[in-house]
Length: 229
Image: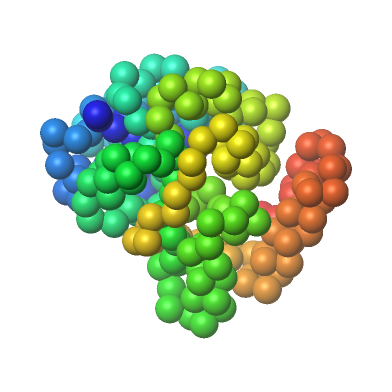
C-alpha cells in the first residue's frame, strides 16, 4: 500500500518548500505515492515553490480546506490518503507508522500533536491529543484514511469552512476503526502568537461549543471572522 500526501495551502510560500523536503527526508520513497499540494490561488508563489520542491500542484479558484482536500483526494492515486496542514511537520518514519496502523486493523487515524513552543500553556493542551475521543481531535494532528473509507463517507463536507476536520473524524469513527498513533506531529503556534494565547484558546472553545450546540456554519464563520485574525 502507498500513501498520497495531500496539503491544502493558501499563502504558504515561507513554509511549503521546507515541508515538502521534510516529508521526503522523514519517509521512505517506496511508501509515498505522491505529495499533492492544492493551492487556493495564493497571491504569493506558493504553487511555484511547491512544484520546484517536487510536489504535484493543483489550483482551486475557491478557498476552503474541505474543498481543497477533496480535490487532492480526487486526483490522488495512493491507497491511503494523508491530509496535512502546511504548518505541521510529521515525525520521522511517519509513513511506516501509518502503514503499521493500517496493518493493525485501523481504517483511519492521526498522530498526537505538540506545538513548536515549550510554553506550559501549549504543553497542557497538547497533552489532550493522546486521547481517542472526538472532543480531543484537532485538524493540526493530521489525518490518514484508507481510500475506500474516504470514498464511502463522501470525503470532507465542502459546506463547512470551519470544523471540517472534526466533522469528518466523527463520520469516520461511525464507519471504521480510528487510531491515535503515539508519536507527535509538530505544529506552528503562529496563530496563538498573533492573537494572544488565552484570547485565541477562548475563541476556539466558543467555536467548539457553537458547533456542538448546532449553530449554523454561517454563524460560526461570522464569530470566527469577528474574533480571530
